[in-house]
Image (cartoon, rainbow, N blue to C red):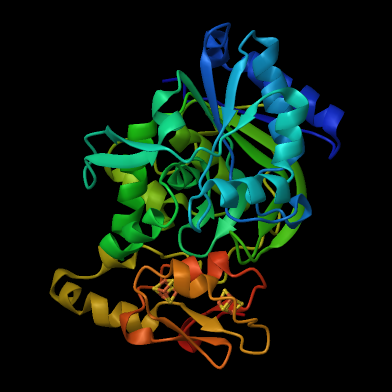
Length: 382
Ligand code: SF4
Ligand code: SF4
């Protein structure tokens, strides 16, 4: 597989983004397989219903540019599909596509915004998960284009090419993976298994209006004006780490991919293609407050201490905390919680921490940013 990553800067306006995306497609060998009769699936990041300016979801300008680049190559059977964190129903999907601005792009370009919500299974032979239950168009497509957003992530450090594929798993089933794999290392391995099962052909990162801080849902938008594209998801994710200033081996996805021999420990500069401006990392990119630089600490513990890991994790790991003044009592956090440890009382959410596995699904899904990530005060640096 071609491990090069192509970088391009763009102004934040539709025509410039269209030109930049076309420039990247022109360099990607895989794009040469696009043509008449090829069924194309585009997988954006639709974490939840949010306006584009919040930088939570793939920006409509980027989706539009990608659809047009696909059409220029003769493919007309184009489906846009994703499954956000909540229930996966046609009505919910229509609402999310509209709210994120992607429905209008699909209408304009003639792509289909997938709302049928059919699912099927696909075997992949992963290390932890041998078969995944996935959105049907993901399994049936001839060609998959993955459109992750350049965002921080309170659980995995960043949300990139590999992590974005969790949206191929329908609705609330995503939360079950948090329950099955509560340790970050195992969760990262599961995501690598998923990536090896879905195997997209192209990954194009929307880093135009990126997110720093408490991503993926509650961070701060940051205008980066960058697009990254490649065929190897792990190279693309290493390039994202480089852009954000994260140490790849301190993130669970990259550590799992490296352990499996799928990527190096750090990005090889020789693989980055682009002009000097496009290759410039983002100075001062703010990580998630839960990013401690040693997110995979179990691997570093001496063997005799490993039995103590669950108790240590419970005590030391960052935890979700409800800001009661902001909570509007919508119950979305209780609905998504894989452990069912959020109770609604007096119109507010209350977390029972004893069984909380620190997956931060509640933080991701809260529509009013009422759930913050609180670090143990011993580990706070700012
Ligand atoms: S309370 Fe939040 S972090 Fe804890 S298990 Fe539930 S969803 Fe995950
Ligand atoms: S999702 Fe947010 S606003 Fe809704 S109940 Fe939970 S904490 Fe409150």
